[in-house]
Length: 229
Ligand SMILES: *Cc1c(COP(=O)(O)O)cnc(C)c1O
Image (cartoon, rainbow, N blue to C red):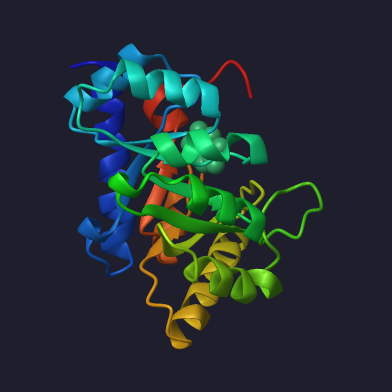
């Protein structure tokens, strides 16, 4: 068995254990393999081990892999910071975007989405750590952003994404993830009908699953340590 295959098995087992402990169906949680800095050959190995969904942070790098692997039935998620001049490439090549935090970016994605491709699946990135440096929309600004995105053509608003600052403290991890879930519940109480909470990485997936994650984004635990940040 390849290292990637055995790593995938370990990660899937962690998801099942966390879901079961929380009284959730493991099948409610999708595993997104974060393949930034990872070569196409390793993505092929992950695909051979049953993985279908991959996340990329850098547009150029992601587009190269999407082209190189176009013969495989993969689903590509863009999860990195979005520059205005990259919105066309993202809208044309990816299936999901997790990191929408500004109306202007959403408008550009909507304008550039090819009509033949079906809607671009969108999550709004929320800043739940309150750090100045972290990207994402402030919790109090989520509702107006959600209203604006919902009104745009060729986009389908699916839910919220968050990257809380790393913490070893599971209580703190859970509190941050719970605040994202609460925001989603508030939107749904207002009729948004959202089904996606994209949260949890290699270090904190258990806390995220406990608090309702429906997509966990896992890089290191599948592909190993990255050399560049
Ligand atoms: C790199 C990255 C991940 C994966 O992080 P790991 O700690 O390697 O699992 C998840 N989400 C985003 C947005 C990332 O940039």
